[in-house]
Image 1 (cartoon, rainbow, N blue to C red):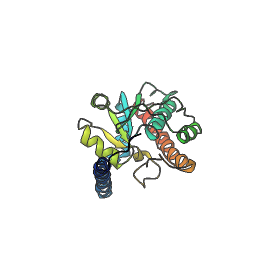
Image 2 (image 1 turned 120 degrees about the horizontal axis):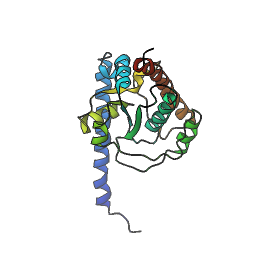
Image 3 (image 1 turned 90 degrees about the vertical axis):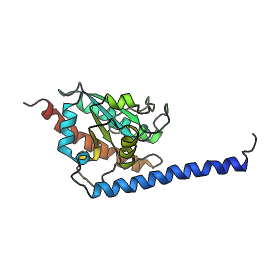
Image 4 (image 1 turned 60 degrees about the horizontal axis):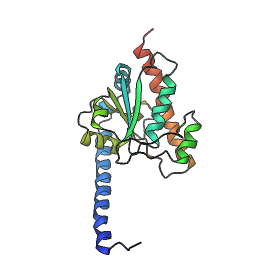
Length: 209
């Protein structure tokens, strides 16, 4: 294989550094933004539950659509399958640029412990029409929120999944990609707890007794 010219290698570095720098700065900005606004609608559990309860289509987003959002999609579908809200269409997608990637083995293993099968999952990228067709969108972290606001301005009802977490700090559900088994178990436990709480609120809100 021919060696890559040094000039080509150097040309690649600034772009990668630039993207990473932008991501870090955006994450810091939104972290400060939401800490100063704890009553922001995107963090409002009641408003989020009402929005999900009124929705026909729910979209769950993360960065790569291989760890967090597919787990949330399939877990929520299962949680609602035997309830009057079973007809809610739940989808997931990623805000990154790569499609067709499978969930990593540790994700498949951890999801299985929560009754979710990710063995056949492959990533899809969020499109403008997918976002526009969704009545409610759930995101995992500040970077997701930033990318959604930047790339898909049509998104309206956008909430952090952590709005339903029994423990409100941290406000982000961090990406477990690259982590160990304990990391995946912890993150998936947080996702499952938040979705259990969401399901418990959505069903009576949608179908009052």
